[in-house]
Length: 355
Image 1: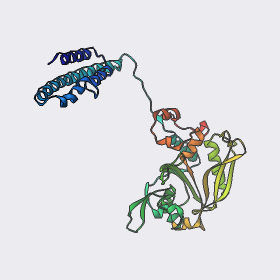
Image 2 (image 1 turned 180 degrees about the vertical axis):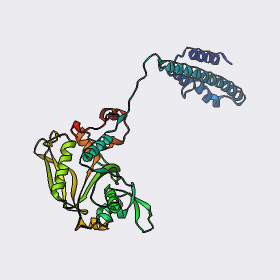
Image 3 (image 1 turned 45 degrees about the vertical axis):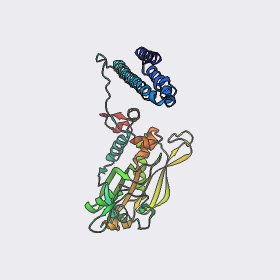
Image 4 (image 1 turned 90 degrees about the horizontal axis):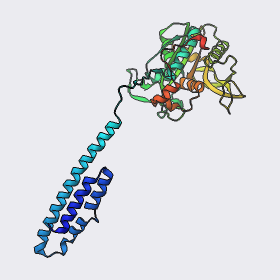
């Protein structure tokens, strides 16, 4: 090896020994093996050598290059190990410090369900449940929703590819009203129930989710009137929001399964978001006297028995009560969010808390 190449070799090995981190190592690698490096240029110049010298000169340059590549790789492995050890040392756990303890909390949706059950439980309502996978008869037909109603559209409802032996198509229930139908079929009046649970619709944005929670309620008895419905819902809303003078308004509306039907609004301030204040109104739930056809579909004589029903979104109640602006945050599993909005796990709901 000629003197010039020997100097390049010794200079590179010396620089590698002095490199203390991967950044300086990389600078040496580029200076030695890069496109404009001395050794690279020498390899490019081989074409200018006579044929009898080209083979000998090429072997010399390639041998030098291989030695330097091996030295560079060896130094890289050493520096990576040093860097890893330093990182592990810095992240070492001091076992003398107390271990952080995070206690479990109750999800705000679960808390709202517990509050709803407590309020209606004081009114002698029973809690019932039904299957999440149901049929279009329970979800639509029995509730007087005709075959051409928009709610039956594929883009609104999650239909399943299976059917019952009677030809009814399976689906994920879009409302817990399906539970009311099952109770009417299985139990004799009088009936007083609520059905909180999961429901499913093909929708997703800041105020809608493909999976969400509803609570439907139903009372079946003799001589039921709108006065009973209004008194029940006014008491519920004022107890839930802990506002004894909360303004409540009933507006005429339309639902296939109730007649007459109503939307229920509560007073609020549109500018501040304060519930019970201001002169604005906010829609909160739907209700009405159960349609005679729904009762007849379930074998209940509408001439003898009357009923009222209502439905409310549990996420909506929770967002309004606790000032949560985005429904999607309920399902993102962010522990920071849950610790902020959650409740102590063993703190049960009590009526003296305003419920």
